[in-house]
Image (cartoon, rainbow, N blue to C red; front, side):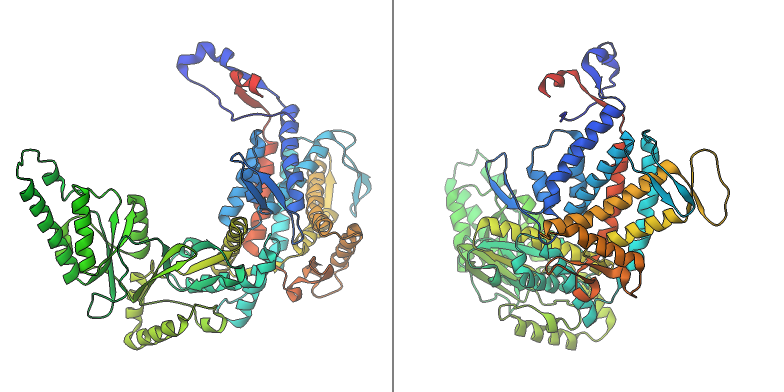
Length: 631
């Protein structure tokens, strides 16, 4: 396989005289197209075995000599060293799918490779004879190749039919109903069934649904970044827990004081960035009286600590490059804070401090005078310090926790914090007398509704794979919250879409030259029709691959039976019939609980068509001459 590195086209006016020496054009026309297609097909062949709930795993040794075992499409692709530019395009495709939908990273790459394999046959003119109801004589490629633009037009037309077919199979629901929560659970389980840690499906599904429901009432766009995930080695995955508030994996440099410094029992916290406060004293080399210098700095520290104590501050975070004149004064600062029973977090980098400030609404104080003037400090119901397997955790429990209705019916174990949360919610309900107050509370605490999932695992490898699977599940549920519509899985959508494309063919008039006017049928070019039928065959190959990966001996017969059910359309739910690969049974996927999100399925069709279109349009590869010897 021809290999290429990154491509560049240089048009610098200063180098016009050297253009012919620096740039070489290679693989024009079909040679370029074939090279690109073969490179992508190779990627598809690697990914095929990762498709479906009975997929295989890949063991990868990356450039850092780390061992990775995974069946996640994007994880495998980004761990492989690729040089061909179109191979890298497939990686970008998988990344885009992961970023938008969280799932379907393997499906979109495999479908793209199937379409490109069909395109290669069409370009070579090796398609078979076909006929429809309006053209009994049949047509064929006649041994001639089809122009890439006509293939693209056929694929685009077929993708529109497939999208319309999938939308007709979809079912919407209300996430606040029991039926809606059940559909969410089934969709989440379908997603996790294809993961390496599928044996933990019920546990991870419950964790994912509970956490996503906690943030479902947030105003604005729901993001999985609102859910904090902490992975701790030790114990089994079954010991994973969820908390309805933010937990920070961080340590303290002073003792932790569980009692509040506030009369109300609240815990106030702020971040200090006082790096400039001691600069004048520290840089004044003309001061001969060192004792006066130290006394002034000590008084400065005293005033800061007294101000913190008066404001009821229980915990502070400081910048890691805090410019304290010397180590003794640094120890002096910690000594006074300890006497005042103010806990001090291990110093943060500025980026980390800014991130936590935005996420938890904790103010950053840049001058000690702001401590005296300001009353806008972040208040928590409680702050707890916990150590699990040498991992220090700080729990920041909020006063107001906004969750969906009836959450307690399906809630996960909150480590004995549920009772406190229920009492807290009851108090909040009594205090909120009107909708305006509720809206104000929600607006002020949008960044506070940050559930935390603590994942447990026996090995680092298991933890990483569990975290990847949980991320995919959360992304799928996030999309369901945004657009609560599901479609049947088990390749029911692909088979039905293939049927619809064939129905379009049977109702079309095929033309080779000129136009044929007929109001009752669709007129379509022969070459475009061949491309459409190739698109339909590619969709059917998804079903074949799923069955083959599941170890079904007669997988072709199973697929033919499934196609026959869709073609005959004798049942009311024929369009929803698919294959439950866990039990190797054909049936209604809504009844079997094998569901996918509509957004994910549409994205697979759309993105696969777009990437194939982009690759087929490339007719020349340009690269630097000085790279030729390296390829």
